[in-house]
Image 1 (cartoon, rainbow, N blue to C red):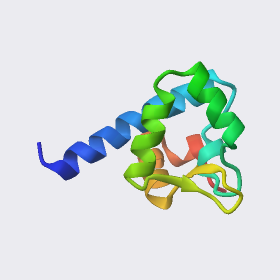
Image 2: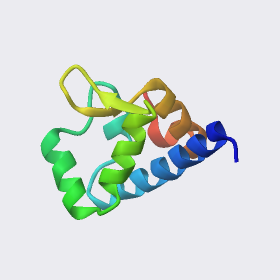
Image 3: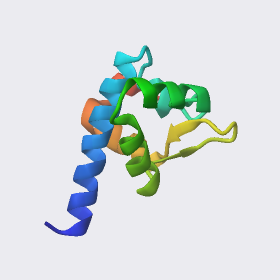
Length: 97
């Protein structure tokens, strides 16, 4: 499998898992799709403790530049990460408006 295809597949898998973990832990997709929101360090730590796959997915998203920290230091998706999320779940599921 070509590297670009493998990376995109890994990203999509992580985004799907992240969406499920967010919902399971009382968050919504907008928590990470809206650049002014994001997850605080405390929330990230809680997710890592409550959802064993969170840390791995967070690392994949950050390494692939699908996620970053916003101006307030909170974890959010980059434009590329949002585009993939919207492609997978529809813009209505994680609307930026």
